Length: 122
Image 1 (cartoon, one colour):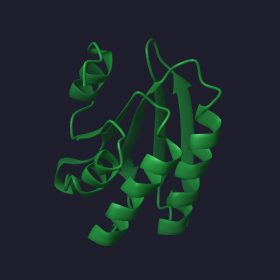
Image 2 (cartoon, rainbow, N blue to C red; image 1 turned 90 degrees about the horizontal axis):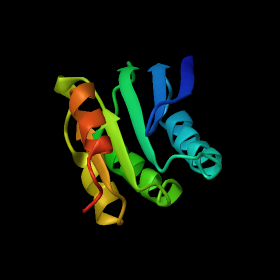
Image 3 (cartoon, rainbow, N blue to C red; image 1 turned 90 degrees about the vertical axis):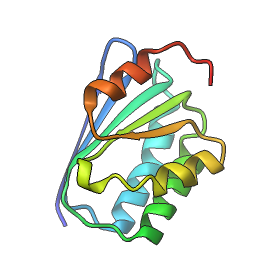
Image 4 (cartoon, rainbow, N blue to C red; image 1 turned 120 degrees about the vertical axis):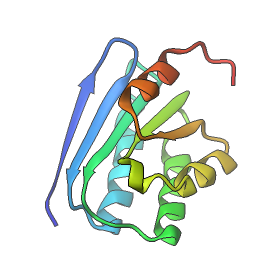
């Protein structure tokens, strides 16, 4: 399936926007590649905008996505994922957090940005 990726440096975080229909395998590979690429970023907070992803993922796939995020992005201080409200399940968030990565899923970009900007105490 076709998908697009845009990476932008913002004031205090990196914004990653994925749109289109990546397959499950493509999304896992993309997370892994972002883990490698993000090692060179000046920021250790990232907002991943998934609102444009049209591929439905099963709960086991969501869990595996969270595990891959934990494995590939463990060096990031905070990861905010933004999804459409109807796609908030917290499955990937729980999998990533269980593996020690500070991930939160939001359905509102403004709230995600506020969490990224807040002092890190957690």
